[in-house]
Length: 93
Image (tube, rainbow, N blue to C red; front, side, top):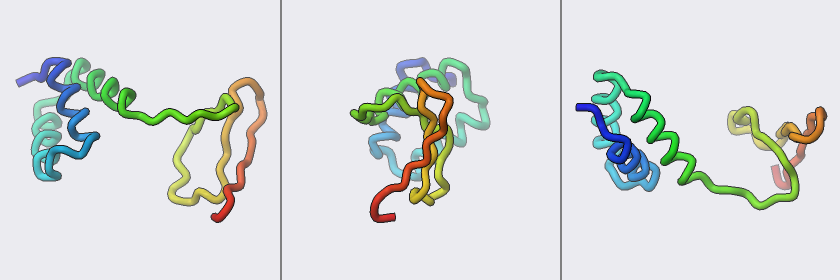
């Protein structure tokens, strides 16, 4: 059956908190994929993910446009108020 937005949100929020076992998560997402996800379910998942996201307190307006693939020694960020690309070298890496 199709999950309500509240049910989809509760499920994904629980997954993000690590509450279901890996087998339970696998069974649920397999069932969703076989049935086909609805727009409402995906939107509820996205809302749960945004609510669980950590925010950073920093003095810059930046956006991370891609993952580092595990190599964090040399990150590039885009300053939102500037056309410049800034390369950041992290200490200890």
